[in-house]
Length: 162
Image (tube, rainbow, N blue to C red; front, side, top):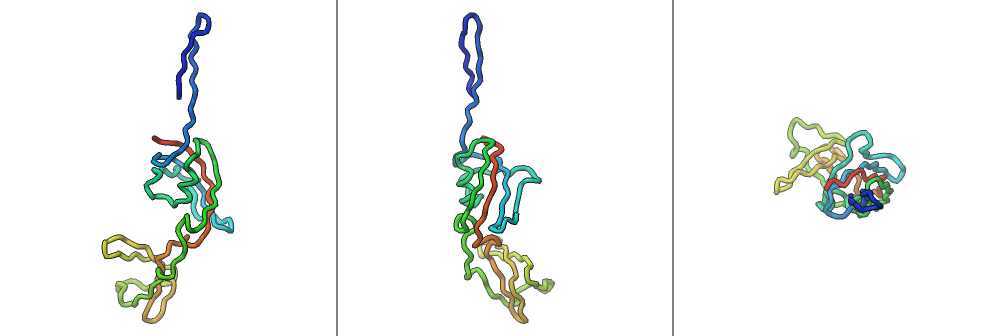
């Protein structure tokens, strides 16, 4: 906001001019969004909760979403069509792995669709999904569930926090 004071006749006039700033990398923003698949089905939305607050440029958003927010002004709405490469990447066959059932804890009975978590040698957890159960082996998939999918996001910039 810019305050301008000037003299008109015998009166001081004060005017306030609101300068709308555009989002840039490094800004912390609040956005509402709805994410949809190519068939129009919604896979995630902030509509029934607080807006997403995130600092751009920290790598916490998929690149296509972040690029769509840069340049917006408060109140702007946009629809971003994001190809899989700029979302969660393409599906990778090498992330589907066969492991022996005996490697699972005894109390786990694997089922197709079951979510498990593996730990990398550095301790970093990796979520995986069971895609096939055989007598002695199971096949797990470490691809993100949205990998290989083109996405559409309806985005509204609510606030530039900083």
